Length: 378
Image (cartoon, rainbow, N blue to C red; front, top):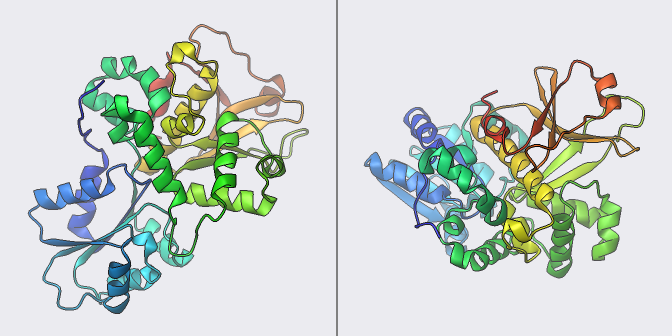
C-alpha cells in the first residue's frame, strides 16, 4: 500500500494565471478528485480572502437565490462549490460577467452546468473553463517518477486513480463504492435526477462488462428493463457527471462502416471494476485487454480535455466486424490506434481501413508505446 500523498496537479498554474487576470473561473470534473482542495490551496497560498458556499446545502441554495449580487461582501473571492445545484447559476454568471458582482467568482461543478448554451460557449471561448479529473498518468509519473509509475501500472488498471483510492488500497473497495453512490445516485444537478436506481446499476454493470463493445441502446434497454430513451438519458447524464465517456463511430460514407453507433468507456478503471465487484489482481483476470483499452482511451481523452487539445475522437468499425479502437482527427489528419496489453503480439490493421484511408497513420498502443500516446501535446 502506498502512503497517502497528494499528487501536485498540473492545472494549478493555469488556475493561478486565470485568477490573476479574470473575474470568473469554472472548474469542473468528477466528484472527489480534489477540485475544492486545489482551489483552496491556490487561494491560501495567494493569501486571498475568500468565502466558500456549499451549494449542495438547501440553506445555501435559498440564500444565494436572494443575494446573487453578493452585495456588501468584503471578500475578494467567492467560491461556489457544487454550483450545479443552483437553479439560478446562469444569473450569477451573467452578473459576474456584467460587473454587477465585484468579487472574483470561482464556480466548481461536479456536473456539467445547466446554463444557457451561448453563455457556456462564451466561457469556453474565453478559456475560463478548466477540467479536473483524477490524477493523470503524466501527473502521477511526475510525482512518483516514471519508473515507479510504470511499476504501479497494474494497480492503476485495477484500482483506478482517485486520490483517496491510490492512497489507501486496503480500503479501496469501500472508497470506490462510496464514490459510486455519491456520484451516481445523488441528484446530479438542480433539474436532473436518477429515479430508477436498480435499473441504472444494472445498466452500468452491463456497460462495465462490455467495455469497448458496440452495444445498441435497445440491447441495453431489454437487459435492464428500461426503454431506449431512458437508457440514452442516463448515459448522457453520467457523461455530464464525468463518469462515462461516449465515443461515436467514424463514418466517411464508405461501404460497411457503422454510422450511428457508440462505444462507452469509464473515466476511471476503479469505478468500472467496483461496479462488477472485481478488484482482483491482474494475474487472476481474464479481461486485461478490456482494462487496458479503457485505461489508455480514457487517459488520452482526459489528457486532451485537461490540456485544451481539441482533436476529435472516434472508434471505427464495419458491419463485418473489422474495427479500430480509437481514432483521433488532428487538422484533418487521421491517427488510428489498436490497443493490446501484450507487448510482443503482432497486430494487423484492417485492410479495408487502410484502403479507404491510405493517408492515415496507424499505431499500436501496448505497454511499450503508451507513454508518448498518453502525453502527446497535440
